[in-house]
Image (tube, rainbow, N blue to C red):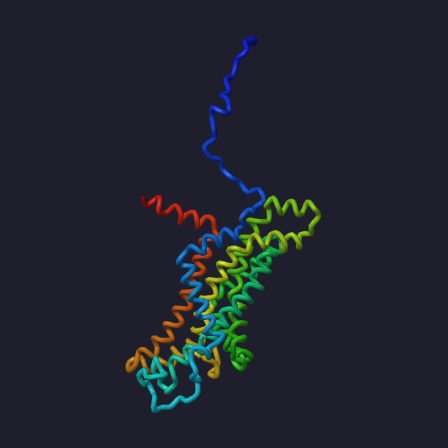
Amino acid sequence: MKSNRHIEHFVAPVDETPLLATDTLKVEAAPLSLWVDAWHKLRRRPLFIISSAMILLIVAVAILPGLFTQTPPNENCLLANSEGPPREGHPLGFTFQGCDVYARIIHGTQASLSVGVLSVICVLIIGVALGALAGYYGGWIDALLARLGDIFSALPVLLGALVITQLPFFRENKGVWTVVLVIAMLAWPQMARITRGAVIQVRNADFVTAARALGVSRFRTLVRHVLPNAIAPVIVLATLDLGVFIVLEATLSFLGVGMPTSIMSWGKDIAAAQHSIRTNTMILIYPAIALSVTVLSFMMLGDSLGDALDPKRRQRHEDAPRDHQ
């Protein structure tokens, strides 16, 4: 049974309920992108600032070693200075062969950083291309590339590098590009897997569906819409890999299968310093410190980028203090 009784609603006059404050919204302002939002968070993180400053210093040393030392690394190596203590113009002393330790560390930065950067670029080209194709197209392409990645992943990178560098071509053509080629051949599967997973998460997004509905080809959609939104974890992994590849180059040089004798390398200096480990331990420690600081800088930068670009990791870090309280 319906009631015909009219219910009156009381509405207070506007002048009796004044607004104390209103929120303002800039309609014309563009929304913050992932990268802008990440930058706002990164520039307030001490870990990012410290690691960036350290990396800039390392890059400056690698590009312009003449600004930091005037002493040639392989010249004026006198046996009379063998394992000599620090003195004016030679702050870290001399090696077993009488070479300046500080000059060798400064000039060794270039080779180590070059191998790391070039290896990351090559691994990105191979891993991102294969991972993006596998993740976006799926089907037999995904299965084929997955099996190919499994074959390379089954061989440890260091062991595989030791085997490959013993082949006649690599043994007769030692150099920066040789080491880069060996690393790129063995280290791309992890990059491909990360790229594949990120592309799979993005390929079914609404903006991808809209692009396909507008007639954009699949390959163009992959390049213009999917990859730019799936590249964040790839950048984080590339930053971490840079430090790993620098260590790998030093290890190969330490074992005598990396850089030739004409190129400065921290791994070679550490290997040569074994003769002086009992008489002058610092000759070994100095290049080891340079290697450790460089790798640590890139690891710190990668960790900061991971927190800023990964919403889940960032949320865990923000919630941790509250949970502790």
